[in-house]
Image 1: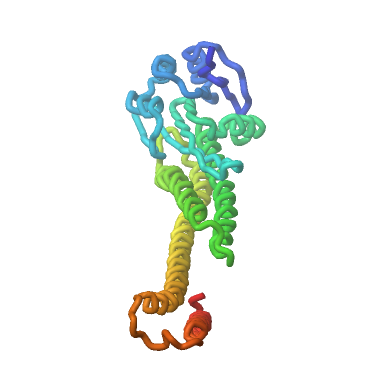
Image 2: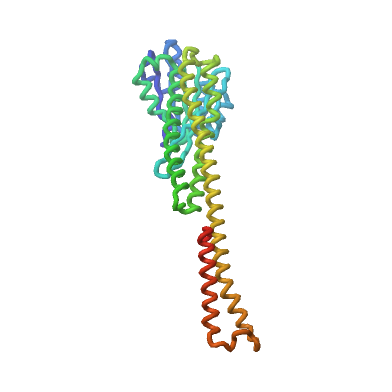
Length: 330
């Protein structure tokens, strides 16, 4: 049977404590002490599977609907009994040089955190282990979890931007390679890279406003003393978005340069074809004239007429070849 709740524990004074299996009892125990909270992690729950959790934590129906449907933009919403934040982790696949995104929903309320993960890109297991290894941070409660998740997602953005930068440098080198490579393949790679950057922008760009809100404004269920930490996340995210915009602009420039190169190559091809056509026209014209079967035509009875005509055609062809060669048409 598929396990929906991947992890559940009570944290008191920064230390993990396995609580009751029943979520209601676990939440009641966490609230009873006043210095503990319950963290429940779920992976791709169905509506029926999530109904029990949403009822126990009194989650807002609109937030529950967003958490189940996924495909949400990064956002931060405040309800009466909870805070709801959506993040889109990004994963870079080295074998295919592709960027894929997951979705991560975080509910924060009175003495609880509920995380809902969609896709494989959410680093929740690593975040939980890192927090459990640092009780000084974890004892700050649900705010510490929200900060750690946001920080982990944005830090991974930085790594993915670095990978995309390397790919773009290789693509740029191929475009300006003297041999030119395969124009069709290069254009396809540029458009593919543009799609990857666009996918990244959809994940990182909209997240800036929610993180800025956590860093500068009073948000319910979030400790105001955590604002400097969220400002650090906001600074990192700002740098990421600037780098992504730079990558997108550079890709546009590379595409424009590639199209210009293709235009130049096409012009060169047209000139070469025109030059060869002009050279072919001379013997065709001469042969056509002498093939018109006139009875009275100059030099028809001259013994040296044939070699003389051949010599004239050769001289004209050589002259044309040298002329076109000097002008760079051949």
